[in-house]
Each structure stands twice: as C-alpha cells, then as structure tokens.
Length: 125
Image (tube, rainbow, N blue to C red; front, top):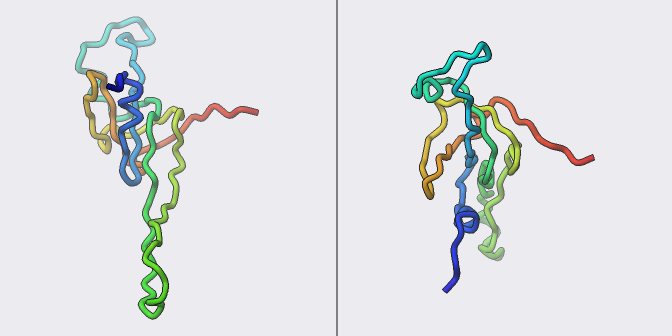
C-alpha cells in the first residue's frame, strides 16, 4: 500500500479552469502601533494575500468547427490560454471573489484569476 503524506495529497488535486489554489499568509494579530486585533477582524478584510500552491490550465479555447473535414481524426485536444499566475507566486487578491476551503485541516482559498490584483514572483537571474 502506498503511503500518502499531505504533500502528495496536494499533488493529486486538480485545479479547474482559470482558478488557482492559494495558501493564505498568516496575518499579524497586532497593528503597527501595537494594538491587538480581535479574532474576526482579519476575516473581514477585503484584500488577502497568500502563496499559490496549484494553478489551473487556463481559459479554454473553442475548437474550430470544420465539419467539411470529416477525414480528419477526432483526436484534437482542448487548448488553453495559460494563466499569468504560477506556482510559488505571492498573490494579493480580493476576498470577495475567493472561496475558502478546508483540506486536510489546512485553510486554502480557490481564487479565479480575475480576483487576483497583483503577483510577486521570485525571479532567478
């Protein structure tokens, strides 16, 4: 029997379409001036940030409808316009467009690319 660790379970997840799976960054429970915030304040924030764990294939392109070419095979694959977001990017996104999910006792967000405001990417030069 194959042993399944939480990391290998994440590898089995498939993100659909133009969505990304984001692991939220732990927000500070204290303001810059040192005041402690009540527990529900950060959940009500309009903007969240987190690291992208998985990325969907992108926006599907419609298949051409060439009915005249009946001699062609039906082995055409669906083609996608890839997303700008990549795994490992830090995403700043709108909370309103995201869906919160709990998977393996961890909190994640499923975010459509249209709700992502900005990405921070570590480039290797």
